[in-house]
Length: 231
Image 1: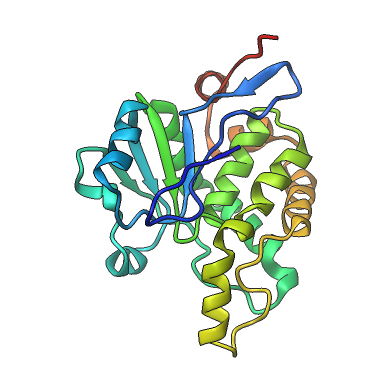
Image 2: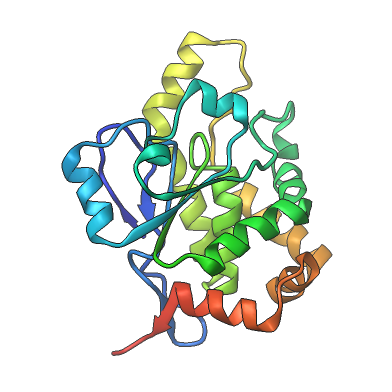
């Protein structure tokens, strides 16, 4: 995992660099995960162009987009708005993993996301509002498909709070009535989500076939996000 430092985003990371359980490694400059990019400097934009970014997947609602426009939306990239549930914080902390499974159960929209990933001709930038929940669920599915160990999937999710911490603290200072857990990305949230996912779908391959992907689709996505590991 590699954090990419840009002025207007806090939780922007490259999903590359994870060793898999079948002697491969996730590709750098293939999948980026992020909070919403409001503004990029010219040098920051050039970084993504240089690394062949072509596709933006914005998982937010129309209302969220109207409040915070995505910088990439009118910059010549292939921009897709595929709305996933999850813009609202659950009332109880224990319901966070259940909410993630509800996102996963939305098979039609998840299929749209994976179709865009499959058909993209370059690197893909995936964002929601904070880059933690909806984006975290998509990245969990991608890392499972890549056969990344679960501890690394949990760690990739967990680090979001570290990068968002200053903003989250400010939100709580300004809104003391909000639940104390709001903004957290505790390891146990993702650990429980993985447990619930396996209980229901057994394997990532079963799940992707359930939402409508073919074996060939799955192979294309695996090759898009991983390469053979060379020692």
